[in-house]
Image (cartoon, rainbow, N blue to C red; front, top):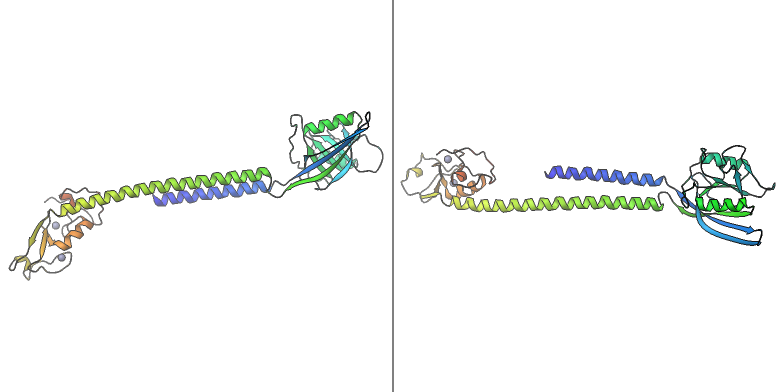
Length: 321
Ligand SMILES: [Zn+2]
Ligand SMILES: [Zn+2]
């Protein structure tokens, strides 16, 4: 039972460590870099310039993690998928940023490459309706310009300003870098899984040890009780002291089967229920250990009415006498 349980514990620990390694692996794939967007615009009617700076974006997986400054121009059509996507902008060489909506069946890489082809220094892609503030880490292999995702709410705000003809300028700045497997979610996930695995393992060990301890105690108690009963029963055996001239002391008589010594006058013998006799000092410890007569293997303790489950080392036979 002990062997089985320790094997269980080992297999459980193995499963636990595989689980931990895979969770670290999973987390290693996640390399997150947030982006600050410093947005400024001048409302033409009031000539008032407002600006805001917020950590609202997330750099795409394949984007250079660098800062870009420029005026923002909206893709037309807004999904920016087709090669002939138009960006309404002045014909100058200043760096500019494309604003594109997520979706419409083309990949992030398609949108970003079309923007780059039009000369954009960066592409801001805003999320679907419903994802007001949520962003995902875009995967867009084969692109070269900076690409950042922002939530739908901020994206639509920018769209409204641009459609009203308000010039908007944005500085994209590198925010917090979450090194390999150091994103909040990964750390959280790894910690939680570590905690659960540790708690379950410790709990299992405590349960197993407690059960073992209880059964050992019960066993010990039973052994002690049976030993006391056995001693008491052995005390009831018939005892004889040999005298000079008894036939057991003769030269042809048998020796004590336990110590292999011949009997002498004055020796104290115990006579068992099978009528075999031995030195009292030899047979008493023998019976406590073996239960049986050394000569005929009869179960003496059973014959004396002591329960059978008392541990035995030698074979026990039925004694009819
Ligand atoms: Zn003896
Ligand atoms: Zn016997």
